Length: 77
Image (cartoon, rainbow, N blue to C red):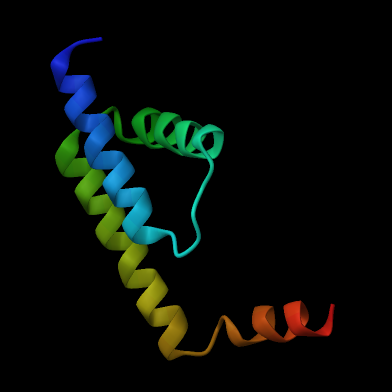
């Protein structure tokens, strides 16, 4: 595996750890990394844009209480 891929994988692991509140198992992490690589072509700038977009959407959803219904459904189970 070329060094560039190794460094990109480290960046993606840190990104997934930051974006995800819960811990992922190794299999899930590998699947997410593969999806991100496929969607972005492995371009670090594109990955950063994608992560920023996800963070922005998350903040908007929190501010608009869009997660509220999900929390209530989980509590009712």
